[in-house]
Image (cartoon, rainbow, N blue to C red; front, side, top):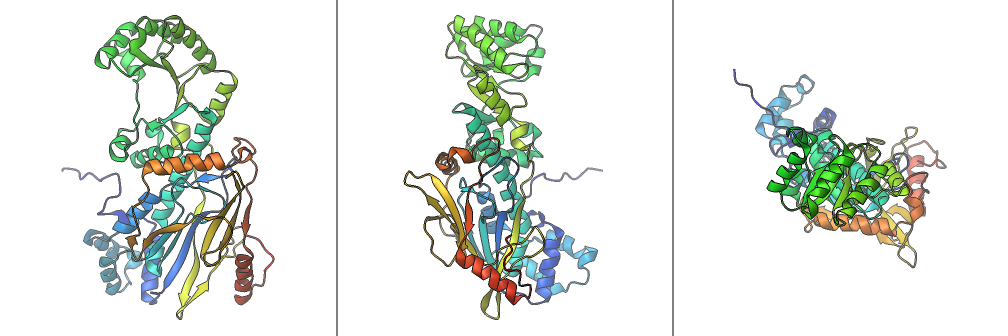
Length: 462
């Protein structure tokens, strides 16, 4: 019997099912209760990961792609009909799924924007079912890419102007995660990636050397180096640490300036890089670059700088693609406002440690006279505040309001915003807490809402 192969990535045929089941059971419940009114949800991060004082927003392009293309195919609807939990759902709901489209509005901070805890990264205003169904997909793409873009920004900052390349595809949590990590790390400031698909689909610069297996496949290391140079006479980087790193450096030096780079992947990288640099310089190969890899992160790279390592670029894999020290971002997607009887009614959550502010919001960023960020104010979307408004219209009634910025623009935005963030907020350890305030009108709305629902706990802060 021939086995049917299952595609690894969500496609147009199944992307609507790339969600949690409870989104669909709630959709059925809303449909049966005739809850067709519009609602507003906001996606934000409650608490920043350890040792982070900021985030780099990423993933919006994939969120928009989902909202523009989400459909329930006949095959998806047949499968949903077969689920025991949906056996009492009336047939009209499945007919509705066959017509399902996102017809709502999306406002969001552009990719590459620096954001902080509690600030909406995006706001969805749509018919209640449409806004609810989108929750899981929006969270997964925004959470993951923002996490990796932020990690990349920390690593790039630690590299102090020396290039960082994403080497994380083989350690990412699946092929799609590897592709999206390459994208997010580029936004965060990486010079490129080893992921060929990211190069082909996204236009990200791609880099690669060779594996230890190349050297080991030859009886002689010198022969392996020469064979590689025969095929790749330009832009060749040789891996030195298959056997004896220093001896391999001497063999590479004997090949002259055709060797444009060498890679160190193990051992005392600081000490080895200095020895290799001397060997290359003595051979007149001052332009041959030294690339380091091997379980690097921002702290290791900062330490290498302190030890005066002679390293020109860094390849970072596992620590980048998985954000190993903080492998999950606690983004949430919460109902903040809902139409009831033709008027918008604020909504908020009160459970301990997870309280929210009601009403649709805007974030205003205030800078000093030199353009450096001073503070943010989270306000109601309907009020005016000093500073620059961060959330901008992206979709209206299911349609894009204009073309999305290019990936390179998101990368440039991130670099510029990080430059404008004072150094005390960018420290790798014990960074200062960036001031984020809630406007007076927003705080007053929360107090009124608390009183209206009978809790009267107006003095609490979420």
